[in-house]
Image 1 (cartoon, rainbow, N blue to C red):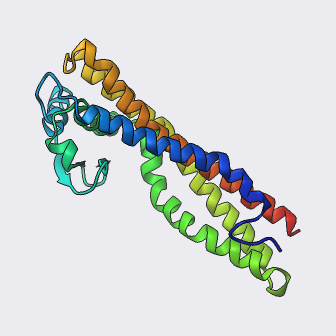
Image 2: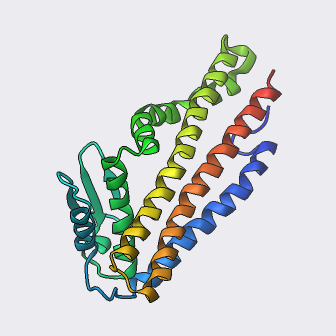
Length: 233
């Protein structure tokens, strides 16, 4: 039986892990660079978020400050944009770009963007399936022929993990579209100067890499589970 922590199929994960580490470095380095560049408009991330929502006649969505670094997100259930302290109060290119991205999700919600609706409705099931997938799969793998229905447990684990992979891939168009909306809002309104557009785009593009890396890792992990299951037939 292959060692659970490291087996021949683990080599599949090496490219994804390398990509993930690079993506994290890219996000942090790009954010750090443009967090030091004040935006010409002098607006904070909070002010930029409010301005975009007012411009698009968004009502009933509040903005609050939360802890952490780059912990920014939009909660469609609570109708709340949550911005980390540096984004909420900061007036840098990075701050207004990240804030605009989160409001991009607000605009998606307002306009009934289907991928966002799918992600929101699928999120609870994907979270539960992801938490159950590995325990079920590896219980079946470890005990194998000694335990009845071990194959069923492995298959259930693969099925649940496939749901989590699908969630990652549904997330990609949601995030890319939010960044596209953000850049449009920043440029068409004149919120950023022409010379600042490239910097804002770099911040938005770097953030998107983390979602691509997460999807790649999930897909390769699913392939790994399928291969391990095949070896136990």
